[in-house]
Amino acid sequence: MASAVSSFLSLSSSSDRLDRVPFRESNHNNRGIAKLSSPCPHLWNPTDSLLLRHRRAARICCSSTAASSSGSNHQQLKTRRPAEENIREEACRRDEATGSCGFSACYVPFNAPADTAETYSLDDVVYRSRSGGLLDVRHGMTALKRFPGSYWRDLFDSRVGRTTWPYGSGVWSKKEFVLPEIDPDHIVSLFEGNSNLFWAERLGRDHLGGMPDLWVKHCGISHTGSFKDLGMTVLVSQVNRLCRAPLNRPIAGVGCASTGDTSAALSAYCAAAGIPAIVFLPTDRISLAQLVQPIANGATVLSIDTDFDGCMRLIREVTAELPIYLANSLNSLRLEGQKTAAIEILQQFDWEVPDWVIVPGGNLGNIYAFYKGFEMCRELELVDRMPRLVCAQAANANPLYLHYKSGWADFKPVIAADTFASAIQIGDPVSIDRAIFALKATDGIVEEATEEELMDAMSLADRTGMFACPHTGVALAALFKLRERGVIGTNDRTIVVSTAHGLKFTQSKVAYHSNEIANMACRYANPPVSVKASFGAVMDVLKKKLDGKLGLCVSCETAYPPCAKTSFSAIFAPTTC
Ligand SMILES: Cc1ncc(COP(=O)(O)O)c(C=O)c1O
Ligand SMILES: N[C@@H](CCOP(=O)(O)O)C(=O)O
Image (cartoon, rainbow, N blue to C red; front, side, top):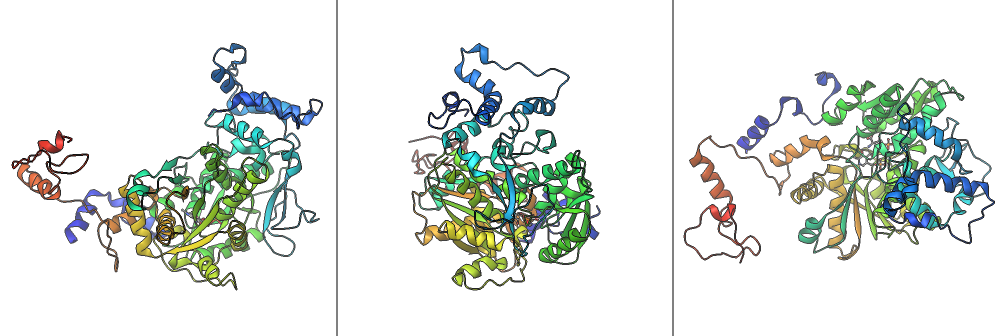
């Protein structure tokens, strides 16, 4: 095995050898458009200026789609904006006509009754309720409900994949459900969202008992390589609004504690807006690829000799003292962006609800964000039911799993041990109450995965064409267990949420494929083979590797033709029976 390891090292660049690097050492459908022009007869009131204004906004942002879908209707063709105007300026001009159309949102204590008197403006800098509990963003549902579900479905569909500012973003294409009142000029967007919903055909068919409807929502194929972009665009946009006229709040910067992904997203969005970012990272506990992201984006990076939970405690203390705005998911604004991944899944299935959604959990904001996205679509009648949620944790960092197993008896934080799923190495999750609420409301399940289970699941998925991160491995391992126990059925439409790009975690993959992980069989290891630069040596290796496959029919794998002289031509010019 030593040779496999050395061949790995010889193939990899010297700068990418440490997965966890201490900062000190690292100095180096357009579908359904037609329906928009035929509003729901019971709800439409032509004298209602709010509705008219929103209808006009919807038409403006859909006009070129409508024109192209109708083909012959040249009158609807959109004229190009003037050369001296950019897409942001164009949006501001357009927005003068639309405004927020009466849609609004505010902070309320998490799970507060409908008539709570404790509300805060989103322009307040507040992260906790009066009693010290979590907050939630509550939308003015009465205004949103004046439009039927079909209206919202069509509006959101009309905006997919456009460059119209800010609707080309998967998050801002749902602006009315996210931050309805923000001026487009204040939005800081990198056209996030609209991520691939990958049909995991081979994994489902060959490794999960013939599951035909298995999908992976690739939230990590994103600007900074994780789902955090979805929340960070919202948070940094709101900070941008607070800093600028007319509010002119004295905010010195935006800060977070991080296991590597929140810090990367915060740094990128702050850099795009010209706002200082400050990130607290636990020394030695994040990957090199994650570490280099905030460094490259010019953030102030503090490598702190503690774990994530320690960094989280520190950032909360610091943001209470200094005018630094807190960017962790304790700040409920983040979840407003993250919830759009759930809406996107519904949209990608043409507004059909899946049976299961499996989400890896750490600080536990995201599982609630998924709940919130699905629930908002149910309440506003874009869909008629909820999926069941599964939260998957690494066994080395499993406080929610233990709580679930105790029958939700008594929550106790844990000291999280090292895990390859390093971004979820969290023992005292900030959003524990939100996660419990989401799981109870969806008849949800919590599963856990050992290090071997998560690495095997990740590696097996890779063998079917993915390049998953270890956190996605945790969710996949949960899926394997739930399939094995018959909880998830063969034909259940199931979504596994992939939360980060595998390229951020290459060193754990290298360790696995080098077979160098103690007490792990690494069943799917596929180390590279070192071979001399000679035809004979290469042929020997290939014959050994392809033994038994030569001369087989490529479709049914039976020997064809029954020929004693098997040759490589059978592989390069394969035949079928
Ligand atoms: C890659 C990745 N997956 C999953 C999670 C878990 O998300 P949450 O903290 O919202 O539970 C995180 C961060 O915690 C993450 O960075
Ligand atoms: N995985 C996260 C941990 C912090 O979570 P947050 O959602 O509360 O910011 C990270 O990448 O830092």
